[in-house]
Image 1 (spheres, rainbow, N blue to C red):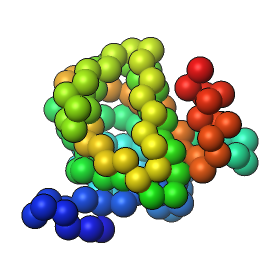
Image 2 (cartoon, rainbow, N blue to C red):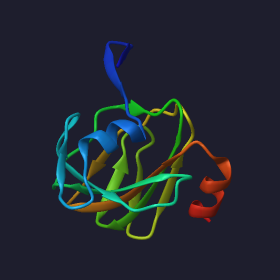
Image 3 (tube, one colour):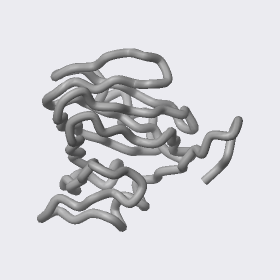
Image 4 (cartoon, helix red, strand yellow):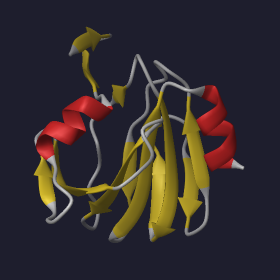
Length: 127
């Protein structure tokens, strides 16, 4: 965890999410009240998670220094509070390694999250 400009910024990695989640049940995330996560079976080249945001919930500012993060909105509407961009069902967001972001959902939302250190996986999934 880093403190930048008096704001706490959390580092989140796929390994941290793997340690907090399972394939069989929704698990509350330690760093986000109101956000639950399930693991998804994926090839070895990336790790996948299904996130469920309760109405109005948001993540803290966070980043992943080692991996790209791809978010695909499956249902609901989310807002990237760093850019004020709004994303709805079917939209995909790609965050570069180390790129800070903070996500808020408007109503309940389901988001598929992929983390990988391989650029070719990003191109394939985000296509």
